[in-house]
Image (tube, rainbow over all chains, first blue to last red; front, side, top):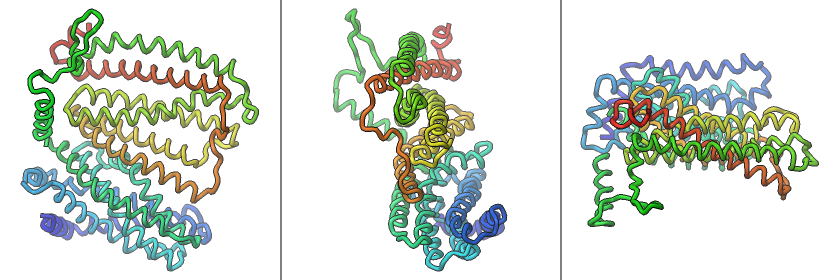
Length: 219
Length: 274
């Protein structure tokens, strides 16, 4: 079931490649806007780089979250998925995993390149990559709760940001904190471990909350 | 899911009390039995709430007057902060209320969702506005206090930041409920969000705390004094009690409005509203 959902969502995403690319370019453009707004001083840019990349990743993940359930909801597929005897937890986990692969992994891959623009040292780039790799699944998992709750509501896009962005704060703090620590020469271990803990917790609880939210929205 | 839960509930009551019906009786002064579950119905609760409101509103007003009097005229001037510290008599109770009311909100929303109790869910929505108001009040009074004391309106102090995030959580809850037209769906969706939020509150709190120590080193601590003068403590506790009573009264008034709005077509509400 899990594999089937993932394969199906990936196929669907492949047929709409433009959506994936637009999220990616949104991320790149937002990150590139900061030097233009703040000025080209390398020292300053280096110190704000982790925060800028992370905040841009948060915003970019908001963009793609709307689509996790929306299309399936509109054509009725989601209702059929809810009726299957398979646990809804697996369905949700599959859809979230596919969303992560499609929308977040490209951001993670391009982030070190953006880090170079901000003159980050190689080991900070590695930490940036690792922290995004661990943090973005949490964004997809928590975000799916918001996506399920706002299913079919007017103004869903803005509403989901209001609901979910405050819940993203720990991920932002630990993720950007890890990169920050490696820039100033401290050990990023503590923050990376905490990020891992948040990942494990949300992996267990978030799909469950999302399933509950889906049941409510489709009643 | 719903059916399963209901069955669990039934079987549990059967095991506990095999013969009597699951009802909570309390004998009142006249020796009559009152069935408290009756008041879980909005139509039955409406008149009761109406009777309860003055019992909370009037003591709240009195305690506000007494608390403010002690706060302004009896409590001594602080030798470090001067007269400006007196704002804590509203600031500290407001901050506490903001936090407690969020937990209470999540509790009521959860009960309303799990047991399908409309009144609890209505309670949660009426709590949300008061809670957001107190959280906002504590931020405003905090920054008013910060200007003369710290010399700045805003510091990214751990407590202030987490209070700000708490306000965001309230705003999320209120706007989600406002966006959904069907009240029952609004109740349940709000419950999921409130419960997720409540699990997140400690994580957010500690992450902000650690973030703060990482970035700033030692920060200024609010009220780092070992003891408070007795009139100060008394004024603060009285104000806290006043805020509690005020919240209960206002929440009940709002609850009555929500009941009227939603249960217009229910039997009993029309007579009760008169």
